[in-house]
Length: 634
Image 1 (cartoon, rainbow, N blue to C red):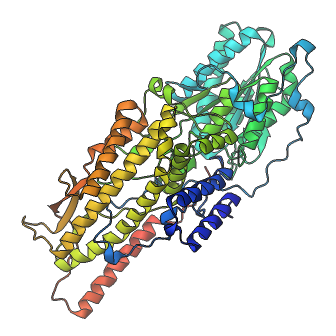
Image 2 (image 1 turned 60 degrees about the vertical axis):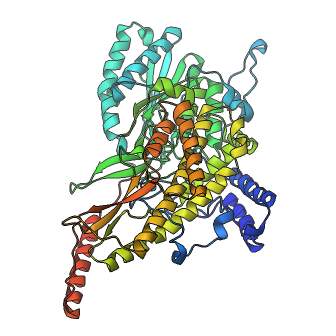
């Protein structure tokens, strides 16, 4: 994947800074450099529907520390540590702009954009890009329903009935054709006939008041009913037997556009509802939401209401996960494009270091993906959340006060340009997402002092890198600290404070880890318990930090406490509590591990045989893990 124009521009600028010695710049020069880089980044922010593939984009922020170097030889003075996990949350599910050409659609004329002629006293001014987000809709566009897919369909029955009470209605079902939706489509096929019977019992379908149309979408849109039908039963088999599209592309906005074009004439005497059934965010909103904005404008002009039966995005993450079973019985979680709930991620992709408890990387955001939710909200429809993943969920009543901002991407970028705290948060979140960093191990075999020293030295290499990266994130975030008090929205305040608190806590732990490792390397402690053969670093309140680090710890706790006190019951408070409950210091504990301890008297030939067997075991293990199983196109 080629770098974006914005990434190229920002990288070139930062390279120039390096050439002239960024470290020597005064504070105002440093700030200027960061903000010029920010403007380049904002110009290239892509909607989360078009993210990164395996190719890593050049960081949008090679901040001021990026020309520093770290030396393992001096890492006894600075470092970090953690379990062997990754700062990035889960397998990358980012997706690049497809080279597959977009389905051919008719050119949208000005007349189509304007809709039918209106009487002079009913003339409506077409919405502009700046006013796209100002439409008044009931609620926040999202509704959590109980009962999963069946509950959502029952809830839609009420929406259809309400529409029929005001006018004859056409319902257009738009089904995501992907493999991951097989079960949901079957559930809906089983339920739809009952729904239509319920509508008949409400006496709102007399005189053929309700008509139905259906289409499916993947990389192309397939209209199943050229003309709306009165009897839905013949369509049920088609829903159950939607063929595998052999592609990962899900052009949902093209599908809505096709529905509006195909059934446009029916809006003259009917309300029209488009109901999307999916579990992802879609791939064709446009690099900066161009298609999304156009579809919203058309739907509002034509009075097409859009609803969606979908999943909640994971909190602050672009990927969701589907449990997939292969023909040979092997199961794994496959990443899909399910978020984020905002235009761009607004949360750092940091693992929890030395902490225990539920996996907080799978928390529900309480909202669907930004583009689809905004489409529903701005057309007067609703996004029905039927599945929230396997992680923690939060009270919808609490989360209503933390609704994402469903503005255009242009306005989102302008907002960040006006507030450095918001801009620095998004930039830091992007940087933490792009750069995978393994956290240092916390368990060290100690059956000999030599082995212990070797493992500690190896652990200090990623520790030094982690310290370097945490300092980068801190430098980015601190550039926006003065503007933090100007933030009015609780969502942004919670996100910024959590990011600062977590980075400062991580930096304090890094110092302690490296100090403990250095002392153990210098004078290995003897094991005192019978059977012990390893040392473990565990979180402890016994911090022996220097005054500077104690100041850092105090600042971290200030930010974390502010999140906990001001935003109870939210994902930000849950993460802040986990961070706070994990002490910032370390202590050594003895342990017992299963190690293949070599015989100190073994001959060179015996050692060669032993190492060869170990290598063969590793190869076999990797072979089993990497069996040829083509990834499903979800």
